[in-house]
Amino acid sequence: MTYGIDLRRRVVSYVKDNGNKSEASRVFKVSLWCVRDWCGRPDLAAAPHPKRSGKIDMNKLSRHIQNNNDTILRELASEFKVTEQAIWYALRRLKVTHKKNDAL
Image 1 (cartoon, rainbow, N blue to C red):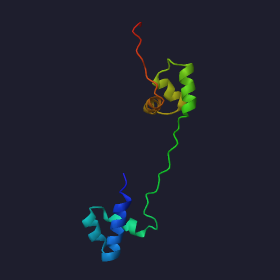
Image 2 (tube, rainbow, N blue to C red):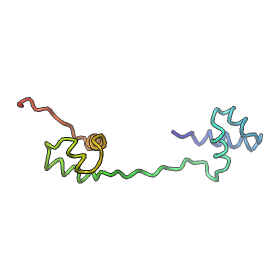
Image 3 (spheres, helix red, strand yellow):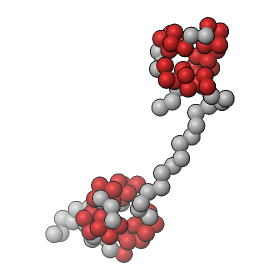
Image 4 (tube, helix red, strand yellow):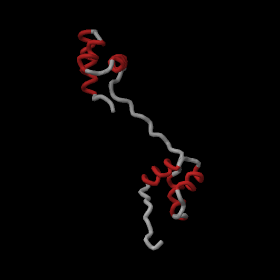
């Protein structure tokens, strides 16, 4: 979670007025690293983080589930060369759940 832009501006203006970064760190209760970083930046806005691309092709997984709906996690994990937990999270994102069959 990032600090707000208004806090960043107040910290930088405090340092410009008083010139003491460690005191600004104590007054605003942020780390000295943050104060040094913000004072050295040309723009105080938070940089967006790039979205990670996953190993699992969600379209391929969805098609696989539609064609083979009785496949277990272990088999899917070996098919897609990922862990069972990764498959479980991917299925959650696709909103695919396992429904128990009372007839069995």
